[in-house]
Image 1 (tube, one colour):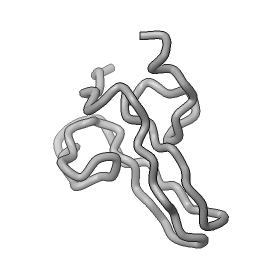
Image 2 (cartoon, one colour):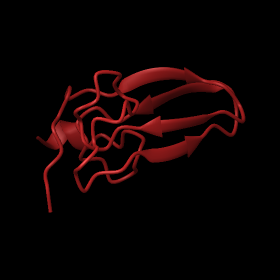
Image 3 (cartoon, rainbow, N blue to C red):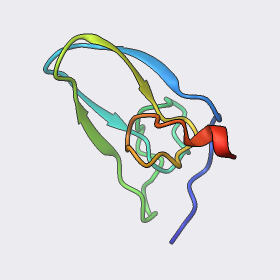
Image 4 (cartoon, rainbow, N blue to C red):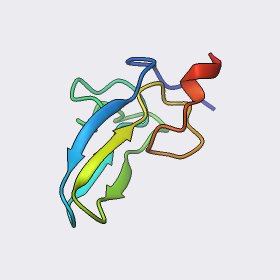
Length: 79
């Protein structure tokens, strides 16, 4: 299993809109972090779809080791 690149150890705070889909980068290679830009092509990684249930600020994982994909669960604090 490949290891994703870690773009940053802290989460990305994003204001999401209710009903909108977001595609979280799981490979860590996207230049549009925390979202997918297709950089995973030809790898075993795929983007993770997140649908916002309500408009609010959410924290997308930046270290790519969260146990609550795609949201931060504090795993970066144990690195």
